Image 1 (tube, chains in turn green, brown):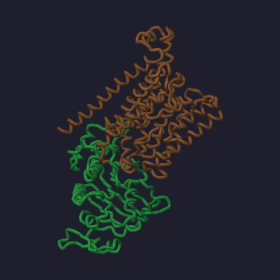
Image 2 (cartoon, each protein chain N blue to C red):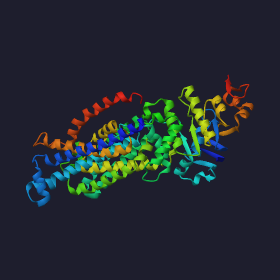
Image 3 (cartoon, each protein chain N blue to C red):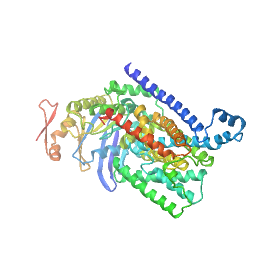
Image 4 (cartoon, chains in turn blue, purple):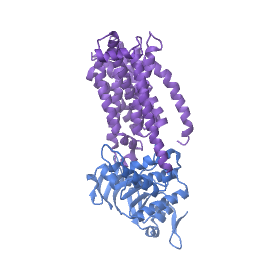
Length: 250
Length: 340
């Protein structure tokens, strides 16, 4: 479990996260939502020690984050950044770099690493494109390649920052189903999202951030009932009669 | 089956490029040793090995002129090509190269200062040259990160750096005309004044640095994924970026201390190698070293013989051959990169 206790963090003197406490468990897809600038991306970066925290404590599976090395963190949690580049390499090369944290100097990928990368590409549905350059793929396929890299990393947790950006609706749904399936198979998925109905439909738990504070951390149906989303986003979120889907009313 | 066949072809292509590179290197080195205002025959070279370096005039030319010059052109070419490939990868900018972003100019200023202070060769010259190159590359790198690391910024800061460092070097040579190091030959790049005293330390450093860079090729690849993705994979990006720039500056600094301000090779060779071998750093470092060494050595052989008995600075030949070839590979490559 990734645990945050009274965490404050930000950039320089500007505090973006203020006294945040939350827990992200394995086997669960947690959707992190909030308006622009509410601290969603900063939350992920704080968990991965990419920015220093000025107060509070973060633990990953009981280990204090401040005592973990960067490699140690990378063995526990994979990260898919927002707006990733399309480097000049093939899908297979990218996915193989998911094994990077597991190797020591001089890092040479072994046959076992290649097997793991191949399995990850198959799981992400990208195996047939293994030899293609990343730059020759569509946005959706590139995203799947990065998902495969995260899978090859073999971590218990995967943190994703707005992974559905730039994808058409069919690709968005496909990606969310993949993430949900990973959570169902035991991975802890923490996913920053902008699409509220999609976040509500696929998440096991919703964390709503507003001005760096957690307003609510609960199951989607409870979040919907409390109408907090209406006040934060200025839209009404409705649950369908059968309770299976959510949609906007504005 | 299809994938493994393609993989085999790709691995085979890299092997073929290595074999072709070694053949090119052998031919260039042979031409570099044999051609010149006094051509050397294989028999004369053999005589130098069997009868000693002072056995005949030919043996002396081989031992004291051709051999150091050929070795210098080989190691300088390898150093600048690998340095260019590393700088382009670390700064995520295909236009970055030691000569364009001011690294060579930083080393050139250091060499000018050394000459003004009476340091004409040895480890101290290589060291100061490296310090000049490293200071320049760090200033460009820090400036680009502070004021926005978009591609144009790096180049613009580099252009400014080139102007400032060039101005300081020119001031020194104006105030101390006896320095003379910023002569036309030095500006264009030239191997006519290479001595073993200069060559040996630079050659050892270049060889060791290229070996180290080869072992770090996966780190270089991960760095090209971008700051956040690289950190997410456990790479200490600040440390590795600084280390790569330091190693690239060492290579460029050593090359400048030997040959002056050789341009083009750090830009041209990595681009040409990427076009045919892809961007995987393991292949890139080794192949850039091979083809950079061969290209500069061949250009130096041509520079010595094309207008014999007159000798041109090698930089002129490199520009004649390199510029059209560079434009050719850029135009040819555009068709396959429309989705960038």
